[in-house]
Length: 203
Image 1 (tube, rainbow, N blue to C red):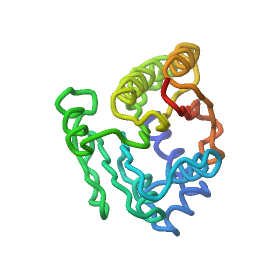
Image 2 (image 1 turned 60 degrees about the vertical axis):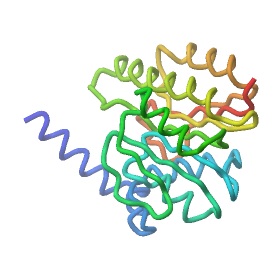
Image 3 (image 1 turned 45 degrees about the vertical axis):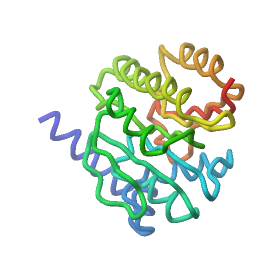
C-alpha cells in the first residue's frame, strides 16, 4: 500500500513538473537535459569539434542536446541500460567500472578527449546516507578515469549527492584539478541532494 502511494505521488509530481512538460514539447527524452543546459550556459564547456564521453547516458537527453546543438562532435554514450539509437552517437550498453569497458572507450577515441560527463548514480534505496556513499563511489571511478582520458585543459562534470562524503569529494577533486566548482541547477528538484561538480584543467 505504501509503495503504491509513493508511486501515485511520483506520477502526480511528474505531471506538475514544468521541466517534464518542457522536455516533451522540445523532443528530449528526459528533464535531465535542462541540468546540462544550465551547466553549459554557466561554465561554457561544450564547443564545436569536441570529443565527449557521456557516462550514465540513458535515456539519452544529454547526448541529444549536444548532437543537436554542436557540429563535428565525437561522442560516446554508455549506460547499463539499453539506449535508443541517437544519431551520430556511438553507444555502449556496458558496465563502465569494468576494465574491458574502459579499454573499449580508449580504443574508440584513440587519444585524449575534451569532456567527460557523468550523470551516473546507483538506484536509490530510500536510505539517503547509503545512496550518497554509493553514488560517491561511482564519482570516484569517473574522476580517476578522467585523469587517464582527458586532455590537460579538459573538463570533468559529474553528479554528486550532498552528504557525509562531500569533504572527500572536494579534497579529491582539488588534488586532480586546478579549478573545482559545485553547482545546483534550477532544474534539479529542490528536495533532492543532487548537485554537480565541475572540474577543469588537470594538474
